[in-house]
Length: 135
Figure 1 (tube, helix red, strand yellow):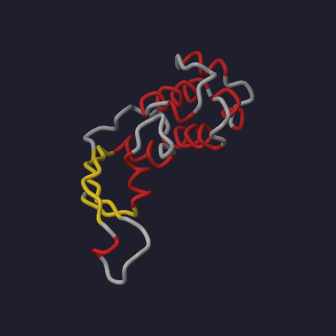
Figure 2 (cartoon, helix red, strand yellow):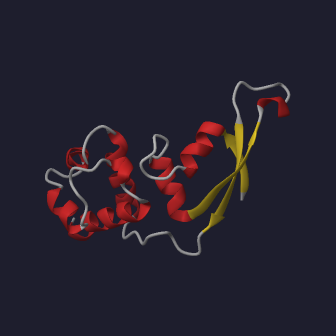
Figure 3 (cartoon, one colour):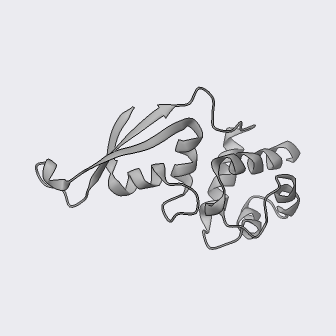
C-alpha cells in the first residue's frame, strides 16, 4: 500500500526503537508490515492549504509477522502496558497486567530496568509470549 499521512503519524508508523515517535502504533504496524517513508508533501500541494506537512509511506504486508505472537490480544496488552507510562521501567509498567512481572522479564531475557520504548518488535513478541506461555 502507498498511503499518505500527516507527517507526525507517518513518523510514528515508521519510527525505530529508542526514538520519541516510537510507540504502540509503530510496534503493531511493524509487526505485520514492512514500512518505509517515501517523501514529504508540503502543505502548498493542497487546496485549501493545511497547517501540517504530509508524508507518503509504503507499507508492504509481510508473508509472516516479524515475530511469532502466541496470543495477539495478550501481545496488545503487553505493548499497551509498556507504553502506558513511558517514564516507568518495564518492571513497573507491566505491573498493570501482572503483580510480579520479574519472572516473565527474566524468561524473555529482557532487563527489567529497560523502558518500553527501547524494546524492538521481536523483543515485545518474546516478552508477550513469555507472559502468555505461563499465564
